[in-house]
Amino acid sequence: MSQPSNTPMNFAFAGPGPARSNGRSVAIIGAGPSGLAAAGFLACLGYRVDIYDKLPKPGGLMVFGIPAERIPAERIAQGVDTLTSHYGVTFNPCTKICDRRQVDDTGDEFSTRCIDLDELVRGHDAVMLCTGSWKPRKLNVPGEDLAGVYTGLSFLFPIRAAQYDRSRMSRIEVEGKNVVVIGAGFSAIDVAHGALGQGAARVSMLYRRTRREAPCGSHEVEQFEAAGGHWLELVTPIRVLGEEGKVTGIECIQCHLGEPDEDGRRSAVPDSCAKMVLPADIVVAAIGETASPPFAERLGLDSVRKREIHWLQMTRMEGVFVAGDALSGPSKIGKAVYSGLRAAQSLSRWLTLKSMNRELEYREEPPITREDLR
Image (cartoon, rainbow, N blue to C red; front, side, top):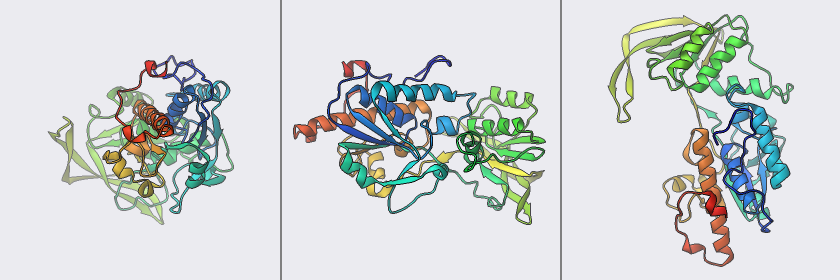
């Protein structure tokens, strides 16, 4: 989906265009990259597609986690409008699909309606689970529960979400404060730039390796420094310090690079005698998120990941498929899109064979091409 930055996103890029109704309907849980791509694909095959998402606008973390400088929200909104106006896709915002074990993640603040999974299954020919990665990883160090310690997502989400409902969401106040950001991925660099842009007195980034190994790339680090930020490498946090329940600093230990692992990435080895303390009013652990899909046990998602279920990306529950981060964990947008397309392809073939009582004839097909839809 590589496109000029001023053009709308085309979520139906894998198909030839709108199609006549085939009389079948699919419910998609989650309006992130995998869900939107699956919706576009299925709509091109004539399916009626209903998308349910807990947030007030479609797009998932593309809208509510990634700054507009990287992915303009207007492009996503225009692509969504096209799905609605040209392909008949219906969006149900602020709606969470729930089960007996309620999981509270970032973004649930906007949910005003809860629908049971069984209700979706009864009302559609098939269902696809495309929830993203909304559960932040923990530092697992003493003091991380102090007031003033945030995750990357809990820092970035309010910046984008506040524009939709300030009564439910407000930005974290950083003006005049000393902010320490842990991590070196794009989320970390986005947090650091966000803090600088909101008037933080000092913003420091800590990374256990060097800028050459930083996932965001050395160029992003250089831009951060040029904007007035401070980069500290070969350090890792071991304790968040505080007084009266509030953050006052962070204790770190220096590291050196060890031998490369099997992926060629050099490990960070702590030097137990080399410690340092940095003052901090706010600490942001921007070290990534994990997926926390609902119904994981009920749907047997571990079995799906191990490919122990007969039909590609179908769960233990007949007619319920899974795609994106809910299946494989955090990934880049392109991989999530591809997963959504593969699941949509599998779902459509299953429904077609089921209508002929031939669903046991499944065989895995080659990757999707435009020819598949002609």
